Length: 61
Image (cartoon, rainbow, N blue to C red):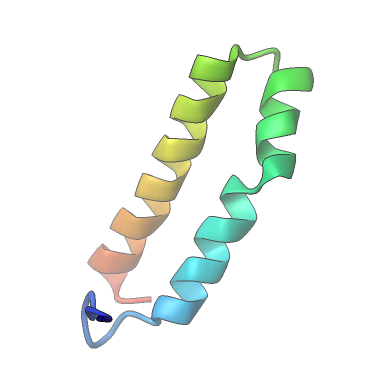
């Protein structure tokens, strides 16, 4: 069962944005380059996904 977030939100575009920002490459960069622990990196990825969702819901992207 698919549930719509909102009529004015492009769910596909939102999914693409979240996936592009939270893929394994992002996690590896956070671990290897930014020097975050696994816990910190996971928290950063979650915050990024939440920020994208919040922005989409507030602007209707």
